[in-house]
Amino acid sequence: MNKYVERVINEVKVKYATEPEFVQTVEEVYSSVSPLIDAHPEYEENAILERMVIPERVVMFRVPWEDDQGNLHVNTGYRVQYNSAIGPYKGGLRFAPSVNMSIIKFLGFEQTFKDALSTLPIGGAKGGSDFDPNGKSDKEVQRFCASFMQGLFRFIGPDVDCPAGDLGVGAREIGYMFGAWRRLTASYANGALSGKDPLFGGSAFRPEATGFGAVYYLQEVLKHENDPIEGKRVAVAGFGNVSWGVCRKLAELGAKAVTLSGPDGYIYDPDGITTQEKIDYMLEMRASGRNKVQDYADKFGVQFFPGQKPWGQKDVDIIMPCATQNDVNMDEAKKIVANGVKYYIEVANMPTTNDALRFLMDQKNMIVAPSKAVNCGGVSVSALEMSQNSERLFWDGEEVDKWLHKIMKGIHDSTAAAAERYGLGYNLVAGANLASVEKVADAMIKQGRAF
Image (cartoon, rainbow, N blue to C red; front, side, top):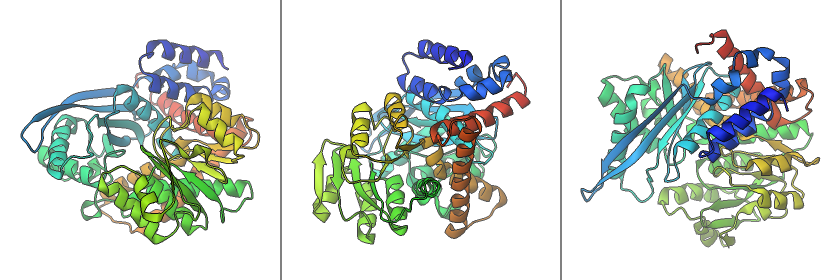
């Protein structure tokens, strides 16, 4: 490892020892870029790696809100605006009890490089709150969103920062926050938030974007291996919007997802989640607020494995973790390898622990694709929504899908080319880090040391 890279990683481990998720992400990105640093001594001269680690701005604020019984609650809101060297900050808002500064920082750091890969002019940010929308009434969610925007509105805007949705933040929450933004700013800058309803400037294709984009990336991997997608059996985690998009597109292309998972366990459907009834039921499960994947097993009469994850499931060709971070640890990775799976395609943000990811990458017969490349579809369509908003245009779903397919192919090709250029073969994880860090670093240098 390059001595400069090693020094910065060690400094991060010491300085941010209380933020394990953030440290893990920095180590994952930086451990791949030694060939790039060797080729560009000006990066060390300009302290690029140290500057990338520290966000340009961190906003933290209280979010008081009233429940339906008149009781006052207080949550914490966050927005970490990491890097705007390439364009306005862009990244989701997450509402979940697990949200804390370490998680938001790691997501924002990762988002910077994901957005750089998208080929679109956007920077990286992330935000959210430890508020849990599950089990809340519509009015409670609306009151929370209005209070959250009261703390955030001064720091966002079409040319500054355009947040989107993430875990716990869908079209409903974005709509309520956009309404609050309009009241607070007395303006209709609809590029201030993305993921909106198409009635007021949203993209016609946003719910499908991340899942469809992940499958388009998978297609390019399979083409590289001269391996058809038809007939492939895929283990999928989660059952939300992303998993729904993955299952839907796989079915359209002749493959099939055979697992879904939730906090309660996972289901195995040997016939695949391929019919319209099954795919539509995934939306019903998410809308119910029960957050139980067992509902699918009960409805369709398939096996349910309580308290387990689907990574030990046999007779699958492809693994696609779509749920949350650190979902695949070393024990789960060993099960995947023992089952002879060839393709490991990360979809969720950082779903694999560092040791498990390295273990999977070390397998000679396995291809690993990283989340920062695979799940670019969502943020890419969000950025396209910003373009539509700025021009007061509306593109139909067919047009957006065409752009998405082109973008995902470009992301695959650029990551593969970067790995090849630095003598790493078809290493998509290293290629994604090399291509994205190089792009951000060059933009920072050209804008001066004060940036």
